[in-house]
Length: 120
Image (cartoon, rainbow, N blue to C red; front, side, top):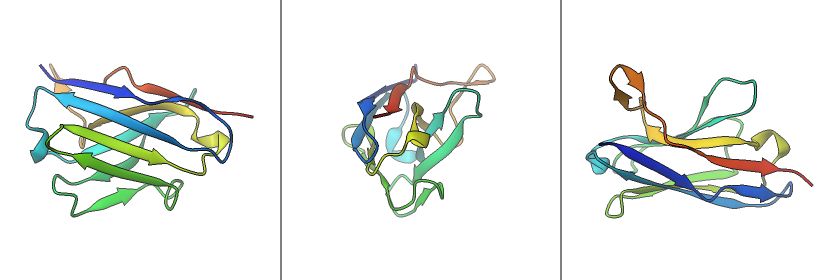
């Protein structure tokens, strides 16, 4: 079955950096658009970055442009998110998923996510 396992989150000071990883399994990773999403407390989940299967097209939310970089390794079935110049408003649980999100029994499947906290 599909599994998405995010890692790399943690506590970082404003201006700091983190690199998130997401290991995928159970589907043909190299054929899907992969994305990073985030959800802050009390807010809707939002799309942060997306990358096509070959990397030919990449999109970012306006709030992270110039600071975050999405990448992927199809051989390792892993997608990454390099986050630089982090701001307190970047604090959230970060999830990776296909785009649109993978559906299991009629509901979007999400991994456990990885917590990013930005605080001094």
